[in-house]
Length: 233
Image 1 (cartoon, rainbow, N blue to C red):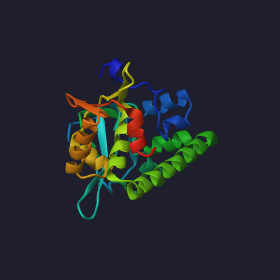
Image 2: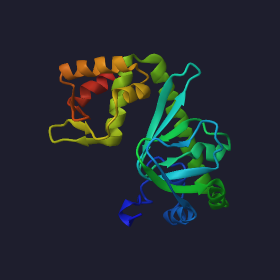
Image 3: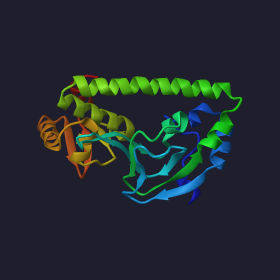
């Protein structure tokens, strides 16, 4: 793979593992890994699979989802270049808690639990950093469940768009934000917990009210402040 495609090891905004280590230790850890490629639509792991490794995503987009006992699919997250997939199972040594699917061709570096634990020996600062990050994720999960339980469908969809704008948004000179990652209405519904037909109804309503614009697959937030109010943020 060309060097220009390799993610910089200093850029891991939400990695339990890599953010815990000094730069030299990050380099040493990733040097122990092996390259892996996945085709579009390929299942990277399924719920319940053994979780003895993590994947540093170097190219591509991965969807993390769960299916309820009634068969309803809920999308938990989308992960991309620079993020690490599968960290929780690595530490609790339980099965995978969700399914991960490559939405595009994905390439990355696989690092085993043994390699991570070897790096953690006699490194108390890294352990405390990991504990702090895990506690933050527990709080975030609690906030997510509260959102699904207490907010209306249009608020959940607005929050979904605001989160996507934070991650994939490009701010224009007029103050609007263009979400550069494309998602279908069905996929937006799976993330927000809203039926696809209701996603379409809310989006068209916001287009009519000039809160958003849909242009060649991109969603442009014309009035992010108003959408934030709808999202009850």
